[in-house]
Image 1 (cartoon, rainbow over the protein chains, first blue to last red):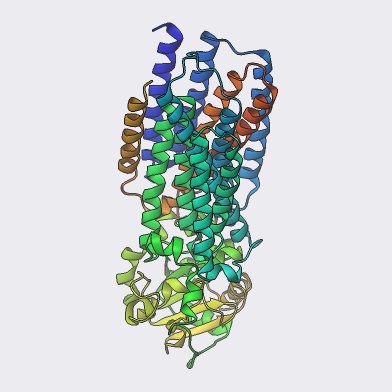
Image 2 (cartoon, chains in turn yellow, orange; image 1 turned 90 degrees about the vertical axis):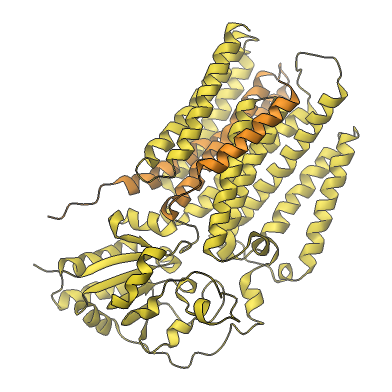
Length: 479
Length: 97
């Protein structure tokens, strides 16, 4: 073992250790930020390790340097610009886009190696070795392509650029996807048989499969899909590691793949959905319109912002339930102003965070943190649920399915069994909502019919602004 | 590196990943997903290898470079965006005056 090999070995080992510590640290609030930087440092370290290894052994041609620099600058530049500019509400789409590009990168590497086999040093042909090489190239292309097209579709759907086409809700889609999957398998077998040109077939059908699988999935299930695709991009990276013979790639890819799977599972649990039903069940609304889920509202009470303000002023304890509507209206700062006023008046305010409120777990926490809401005021569902009976006022802001009592009471409801916030236990519930449209599941919300629920119709930001005005008139929060 | 030992690496890496994030508060799910996503851009190493070993093959150099660009877009953007999210959490709760 010569020096460059030893140096690379040590650096790789260190990088793996730091990456593992980084992922570990990311799961605790206190250490998360440092852990993220640690992981970033480990990544740069791994690049230094690789480059110094090649400098010490085969050397790096000027031409190679040029292309390395071009690729690095363009990629980093666009990445950092997007990361700085993107609004917090679009976080899920952004993660999806980044993720898709990671998949694309693995795909391109495998494609490059497949079209122009790189010299591995030993020229003697080894059947077993070339088989492994072809399998890892195929896996890398297959998973990479699915990750890329799937992520792009997920992003487009979250951005509202793409809706769920009707035909994808019929059983036909299973047939179509099976055709794509079988075609991928055929292309894969053909490739192993030595027919290199079938690689293009593999690229095309696995790309189509990524689209076909993601397109039918309803928006509410999107976070699960993104998390799963995130796991896939790890798998694609690990496969690319087999292609270029890099342990570091395999370890890091495998870690991300496994971590992504765990996260996906956690999200599914929060929504009371199994992974299978998310992937193959289609969008929930399509099923529920046929079932007992839909129905007419019979006992809607609507009230003015003024009444809402009066009730709030008299309250001792207020719980805010934020949802995606809040994110869409970009009303988190306005909400913070309202709660500041209430707090100045000695009213206890906490935020009840449902695990899947918004479009991604933790989405609401990020939004509220952006608006300077103290972390201590954010309460998780299990912690806050026992508090509702002792609460005077609950403000539901753009949340719907996560406060639907059907999930507890109605065994025939598609939502039955999903953990929800027991807001109906509170003395008064105000639901701020644009109209009577259903939530993402498309299911009627029994909460709206309850006698202690009042609807305040309007855009969340506008209602909250009006509320600030009303509270001011009442002299709340002015000292 | 023999194929079998690479398989061991794969297996142990997966087990490590499963263990690492056993318990995560929901608050951190989005940042964790985003951070893990940035790490999956480690394929940049594969892209670099491709460029270094291209030996003047221009189409391969271009493929490698584009691949590197995509990977770094993922890595740099991913870490920055994660840091942005986390910076909001770590902000100390404003002291009541």
